[in-house]
Length: 312
Image 1 (cartoon, rainbow, N blue to C red):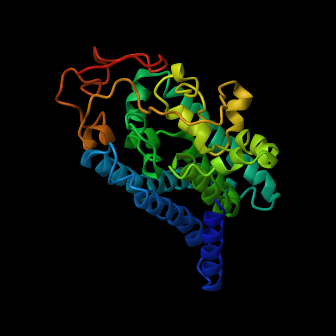
Image 2: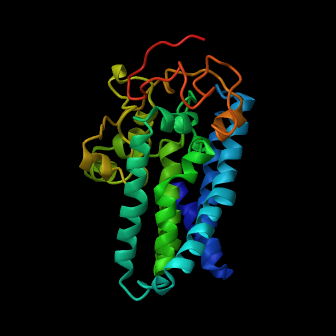
């Protein structure tokens, strides 16, 4: 963890010294963290001695690229256009207000709404189909972070709200908010399991108590990806937080054990081509037994149910 912080600090220092535009720094920090964590995981053998297939790797790489290069920019453009046409007087309306209120607005309208969006995807059978790629993988890693169908992000309220807040004059705060949020989310999915350091030394227990109830950590988020609550660690229908784990604490879905599940995934693990998982329901499975064969199928199930054995 200390090494990660130092490398990130060195990168930021280099970016400032070379007078890189703020928006480029904001976008490049998450990219740096993604590459840095993926490299550590690769050196540890995760991508060479893993349960991942070529289909999984393709899905992860494409989904990771599509969100920042296609989905988010398109949502921002549409939102800016709509508000400029129908709400022109509100452009930069809050630009002179305190920046801390801007951060609070993003935490509420982006991060908290994403908590509820995520939670909905574990209740709604249709929403589950869009979120399903994120859970059928049987091991963790930083590339799991963006494993969701394109429409999962296209409909995500938090991205639309973020664009609206930027139009209203909160864009400067977003330059700081975005890299912090994405860095924490990437670290929460990473196999580096950086929070082990906090649990190892008793002197750090008070700090660990505070951190694990504030932001998402590998322990709390790995529990969300765990296969079954029967292991006493996993919480597949809880621990929904993204940046802030505090939402789980506040809304009663938190489970903190300081341990990591040994089995990951979702019970319905029928394998599908990467393009079906990514572009459903625009592209659907040819297998009539698959839940991705249609918007509503005989294979649909309540995603809030706990694990049960599944066989193709």
